[in-house]
Image (cartoon, rainbow, N blue to C red; front, side, top):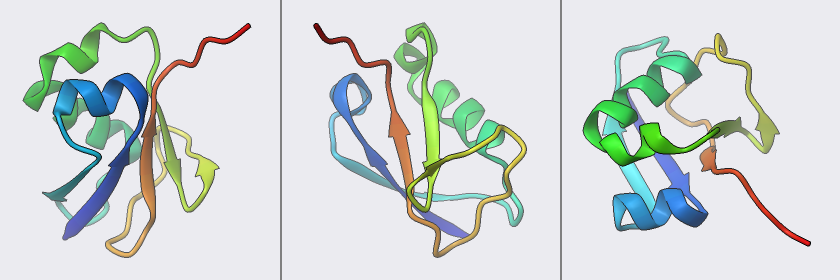
Length: 80
């Protein structure tokens, strides 16, 4: 299946673009997606945390992804 992933903050800087289109096996989990991305972009593994949002909600690691889902990677945010 094809997945489109929106990237924000430092994740966008690491990857070098604001979105990715990936091919993933049917039923890919959010954790599996993160593992694949950390393999392709090793600097992502250096982030303290990296959340996956699916259809505008934070997703648990075991959530299965579907081709038409809106997927986003949300890095840690600091503020004051």
